[in-house]
Length: 443
Ligand SMILES: [Zn+2]
Image 1: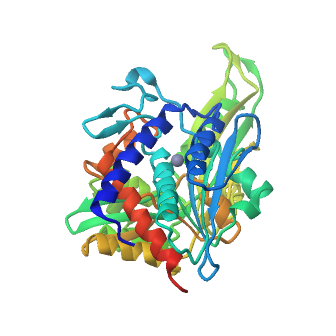
Image 2: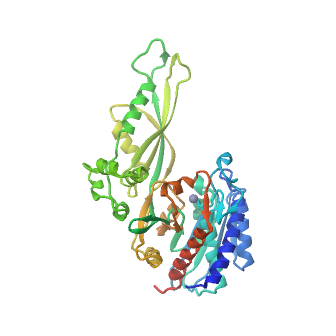
Image 3: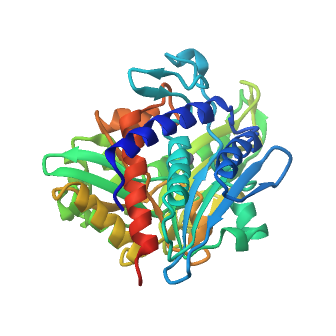
């Protein structure tokens, strides 16, 4: 649905102002205090006659939902974002992280990318649907939730359990993708269609205590060291799913990367090391030994110590499979007790849905050379709570990356997070096109 250039100029100014204000509301999680962000969005929406539901799952942990009704002739769509942000190390920033400073057409602040910009883009789409009196065939819902950065317990997970009818739709667009990366062959836009599951384990090793002056063979620290060695040199078997296959294809990487005999060599030949680690993590379950605790005194052999392992499992596996795999790996070598610290299921959405196709079409409309490529997030987003209920969910907050991709990624959860207002407008326009295509066509 076309809008005039003049209208887009006004949208750009309005969205810039709104994003700056939204960033100024400190929603660092913990403690979150997302209710202040929810109230801000509510105020803007209600001023234009959109009815809102604001909830607190616990004091301060606010989320907001608003719905524009369609005729029901087309599937409904949820535009999702989260209100909370990760902490910012203020000393390391060029401009204070909650200043919402606007300098040379760039908005600075924590959340400028993850993901208050998406929140404002989705808000603008809702306002425009209302102002332009778009005749919707499917409902369009917007939700901004608490607590995504700490697992969603007080946000999306809680809503999915307690308030599901209010947020329920047939499809979801969420954060976690949409980056447009310029390659020799044109723009490649990433769409998040899958997420790995998380399984964090604490392994406890026991041994015989004693005096450090008389070493013996039953030292728990030595057992843990052995386990760390085995775990860190282990590669889980390769399992290719259609997402990683399309991803590798899209970036022109040799498909022999899936051949167990050649994989290591191909991964080594990829210049961008981060890309190589990412592909590796998309094609196998992973285990990373990250925390060790043990021993109190130099002259005492301790009786126990522990190791925390961060394991991520591919879609198609139960999270507990990670423990099974680990037990097999350490079987007969080292005994250990295990405690599960955190777990979440892997999830995946199909690629042959009308929404995915409409996103793809809009990328082509932007540039005939551009391609949409699915990817698997090796961390997690709130999309899993919807996929769990069988709702196709896509991570797509479209942006044009105007420098090295690694530098861009470093801003997310890092220092000096910022977004240009041109990019903010690009996000709004692209989402507007996707939403109006999707919600006004007949299926
Ligand atoms: Zn986020």
